[in-house]
Length: 197
Length: 313
Image (cartoon, rainbow over all chains, first blue to last red; front, side, top):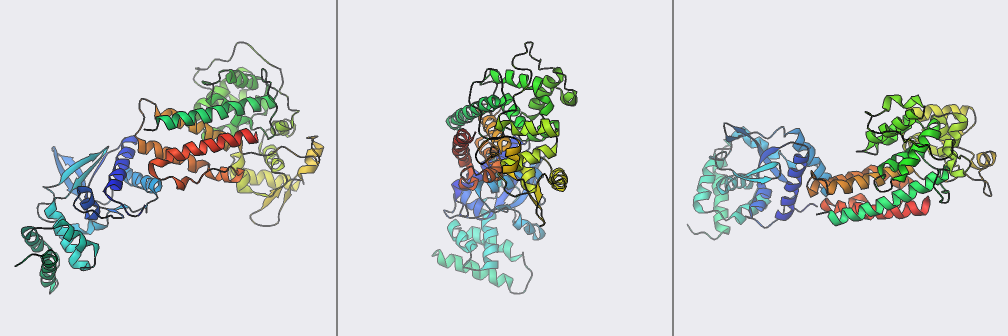
């Protein structure tokens, strides 16, 4: 089971939530990447993993997010069980995007998360603007042949969303010329989407 | 979601378990058991545990367990009972406590540390013979214990004889008996020293028994003389008990969700896969059923195991 579509992802998250409930535990995570796009119905493609960018806890009645590592032990155990049960790689749910915390999350990321419940697992989804920003950053990094560029096109971002995203992405890397790379990538997106200046 | 599947599993596993219990109790000379003695080596500890697991379906099996506690507890191993009981989760402790209570009530104080909290009363009537019948070839294992003492040596010999003279590693013997490899290695090496069995010079060592010679000595019958086959009943019976427990958990008031149930079905399939392979039970590969399909895998495996039990008793 390598190509996970939205139906498969829903099933896997439901399985995680059930395992947590059976163990008397609960967890809350925030997901981004292709898995999040697929679960939100914004892309039709498949993915082979779910990227967890944050853990969440409740403080004074409000959700607060933290870097995802380490994931709660009960969740790690449930992820392993689901990997075995569905024949998935052990890192089908991973925290590889955790390093984004080093340079910061897109503006408004923490305040605009939309939550869904899967049994004892709460899953937060970044809003469109945040996902566009993260996808643009990844597309600049990995180029127009990458799945991130394709995901960005599938999101069909407005010019306003691209502009906001580009402002944030340009501040992620102080290297000379990075700002120009971001601008080029934005232009490439606009061109493929058939936008006129 | 799995109600129909669990009903079929309960029927298949329950019927196979009850049939196996009656057949094996008959092989030990149990009262009210007119069935033909089985052709394979009886595993007393596994038989007791399975019988206790299915008393709701066949209440008379409790009487046979009580009878054995009275006449056969001396050839029943406390240590192995505890070891085998662990694979009969979630009823392991209850099974051990029930039999221990019966055995202590019958005067065997070795079981005293395992007596339950007094929720099981020994039967008031003493039915059946005052001694088990260990004359049938299928009773070879308890017979060896009666002759050599209850311990790993008699058990290793029973396994090797039931394997028809085939070579077996310490790990294989340990898996079959439910002992640690350390206990098996110690027992087997001393028996090899005594030339009761043969040891290879290789490492890891393998062991074999001259099955035909032993069968002739023990007057087990056959031409040429042969011991009954070893069938890994502890694992097979634990699987049947596990399938029944899984089935019960589906309809329990606090039943977990379908993904957890399916995952537990896969646990059961994987836990016994190695023993099924050694016993050559032609079960489907657990990996062939992903996700929720594991419940179907448990159903098809239970069907295969139930059929295999009928054919190999």
